[in-house]
Length: 274
Image 1: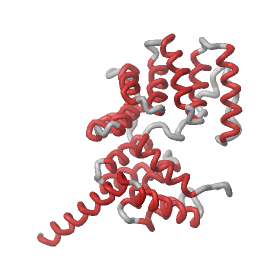
Image 2: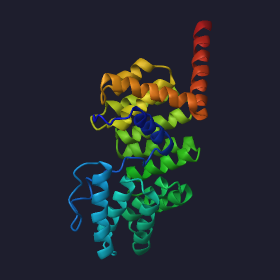
Image 3: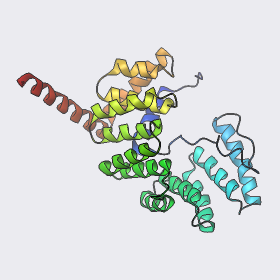
Image 4: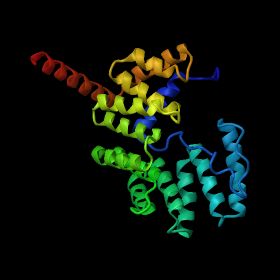
């Protein structure tokens, strides 16, 4: 980990994941750089390397505005830089030219979700999906939109559908676990997030989401242990301290934490009366 590491960044990742559930800082360029006409992958995911790569793509896009692959790669690079409105504008143009292309509609819907245009994103992603050949990533993003709109039961149903298509997919499990957290069901959230974090395909975001849910339950030592899979012991302590501060300063997190505490007390009371 770089010496420029900031512990608050990880708390921010967890916050972003729970609120956005589908886009923040999760765009990879790995699957677009092999296309003809697309420049080689950036040297790293640093802001400067991503900016240079994006500018090269912009030049290609302006020279070949009707090339779908270049346009989609350019939009993806803009999403990676969190230039969500620009990405949505590029993909809107592509969607106008390719109104029935499910890949284009899926990318456009995700960009709209990143930009906070949730109802437009929902409509676009519904058109991008097909009951006969569903795309788990599209279904999961539809779930994340439902979560952001407060429709947690619908979101969880969509995640379960995505998991039938892609069993054990850690990103979907992570979304499902965080959705349970939004529903004040931290025990279930922890269970699902532990399953997600145990996957060899899980990344740092999944583990930090588990650390967040553990911290919400007051399991700070366990949250540090999870964080240490990616961070030094001191960085893990700093990160959990930042998560604790974030929880204390946010009404939504405090409400979730208080509901979980009440639920725990009620379960203890029931056990004592048996």
